[in-house]
Amino acid sequence: MRRSSTHRRVENLIRQGVGVREASWDMVPAGDGPARERLAEELAAWVREAMATMRRPYGIDHVALALACRDSTGRVLSTSSLGVIRPGSFYGAEGVERIAGFLEDVELVRTAGAVNVSGALLSLGDLAFELDIARAA
Image (tube, rainbow, N blue to C red):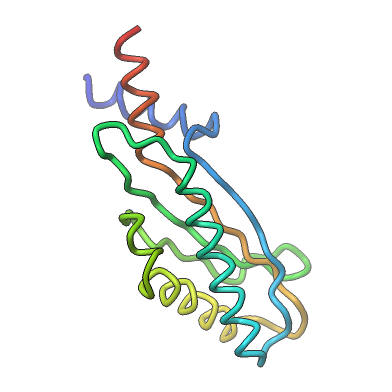
C-alpha cells in the first residue's frame, strides 16, 4: 500500500514539473558532421547547466535524460532515454558521446530539412527533496 502511495506522489510531482527541465534545439540538414558535434556539445552544456541548479539531498545526484527528434510537421522521428546516470558522465567524454550517438541515429531516420531535437532532464535529487518535505509535513 505504501509503495503505490509513493509511486503516485512521484508521478504527481513529475506532472507538476518538479525536477523537470526541458529545452529544444534545431538541427541543421543532414551531412554536416561538425555541426552535429557542436550540437552534441551544446546539449551536454545544457545538461551540465541544468544539473548545477539541482538539489542533492543525502547525496542523491542522479538524473534521467530523454531525447527526442521531430520533423518540421511535428512527427516524432526518434527517441532515446540515456537512463538514470550520474552527473559526472557529462563532465567527461561519455555524456557527449552518448548524445552524439543519438544525433547520428537521427541522421539515419530524418528526411531533408531541419529537425527539432528536444531534451528532458529529470533530477532525482529534486524529487527526493520534495518527497522528504512532504513526509515531514
